[in-house]
Length: 497
Ligand code: NBP
Image (spheres, rainbow, N blue to C red):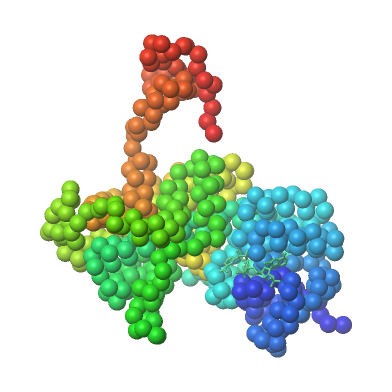
């Protein structure tokens, strides 16, 4: 009889197919199934030819081909497809069998599925996979969480196929219960939105603001990639800017329509930030920037009606007239590098604040050092400075905010002048930089001892008797003022949502 397979993969689209090949290359025998079964045949006759794979034409065949306890990983579209698969597979499985959802599922769904399947004796895991096609084949970052009893059986496979950091550690670690793995993957994607938009804003400042061509901007990003900003996204940006369209000979980036798509994980992260009351303005602004990019026709029409500053870099008009008069492009590029790095630190600080609050809210006991460690390689946000974030959380797992770690505190202090000057230039030139601007406001807001929320509370109390606390009384005591002399003394009940 043929040897049973070590793991099954359902879904042979771009991610599934490459993960199967990755698993096989690490010595595992992999059973594969796809809803449209012709794709199984096509895969086995194509990239899967001659490999240690078992092609399955039904879920029954898939289950029968696996070594118990069975390990089955889904790489299918998130949402209803996952529930349909679970409903079809669960009756075919035995207690102790393991289902892993490697797609971008909502963490709420994963929490629900973990609980439902536990009642049936099945072990469910939500494991976000990042790294795209290339990562899936050569080593992604994998973020598993769910029923911990599944981990001993999954660890040898998932850690074998995961990317390895420079110190040899696999970019896959058990993260926690319920949907915590998918939550971490969602925040990863939110941070990815912020990083991408930040890079795009730097590009726009150089192209629209300084009038530089793609060929001139390309070496700037390539140079940044040799220092603190060294990261996958900066590296691919340099590659993209150097790419020429075969047909026209022009930079390909210049020929691409400026409307961005999105598949929802940035939106989810922003929604969760609002739900949990955590300030993640850079991630939210990055999502809104995509929304604004999508209304291309409106923007084109508005150009004739909505006025902006006139002038060019060094010769701005309006209130910022002459603000860069003594500045040259080379020194601006140096300042921009510092501003982008400072903004990136703030963005990750916000992402980790969200993880921290969710960990407390849901009792997940997340280890932030582990999360930074498994993002060092394999994933889209991989970057040199994730090693520094790992060290910061290993030194102080209780860090109240990443910005407060000694190294980051120093970088932010050192970037001050450049960061503020770059923003002033952007405003003077009328170049939109929502994420860069949000980063400095977050920094200034977080370090502000007295925010204007005193006035805000007064306004709320004025029109809605929402009450306020006083600086000269203990916290938790609430007061209402009859501001006009004509209102009553009845206060609204005090609660926060
Ligand atoms: P897609 O997200 O395009 O999904 C296509 C796969 O889902 C096909 O195998 C399709 O089968 C299967 N499927 C669908 Br659609 N409905 C199904 C159902 N009701 N039952 C069973 N199978 C069903 O593929 P992908 O881009 O490879 O992504 C897979 C997962 O990984 C997604 O959750 C995605 O968000 C996530 N992810 C993607 C990337 C990336 O770079 N693409 C990166 C990281 C994570 P069919 O062939 O019969 O239609």
